[in-house]
Image 1 (cartoon, rainbow, N blue to C red):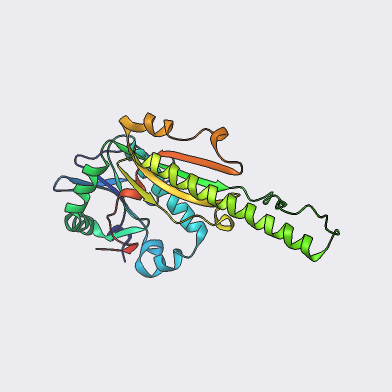
Image 2: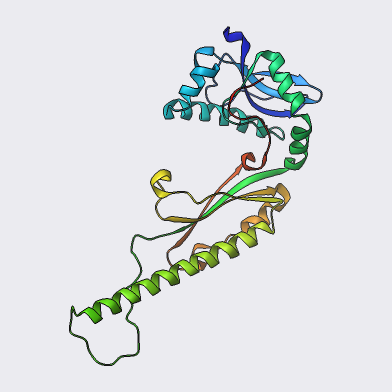
Length: 264
């Protein structure tokens, strides 16, 4: 396949769409725009050796290659988002020829226009709540017995274990309540919300157990209300930690675009 016939599509904006050069490298010979009926795709030609259907399937298993593609993808989308409302497409959206890009715009026209309307004037914020489990729950002693127990006895051991279990359950209950109340407070300031599955510490590399992993689509005129709804660290229950990221181009709220792979 001729490299001229493969196009990587980063995102869609309203026509006329323009974007400055991204901060980092892109994936091919340089960004171009493809227009169709009021929509503009931000795209570029890419080499078939990496992006044709068969090699792309293999490359998607290569984490280093994926990281490079993700950086380039985000760089283009972020730069576009500085200038206009943008609908990011899925990572590794590839079309065959410029006509394939136009077909992507035509087939997704209604969904893309709806997304552009819904995302206009809003940005994505991410909020995660973590439970710090490094110290573990305290070994509480239940009340109700004045008779001293022999150190190391079975009853003393069971008493300590029961106290630990109760303390752990109390901590879990406090984390669940905080996550629920935090999400409800932030959702009241947002136009839309997405609850992602909790992240696993062994994959994310972030310490603590993730109990809330949410994204919020916040209109720019409500961002101060959103920030005000975030609790100060001193107001959190002991062992809880909130992490806030953003604002970003609203990746979590596009709900449109083709699956990964070589498309139309």
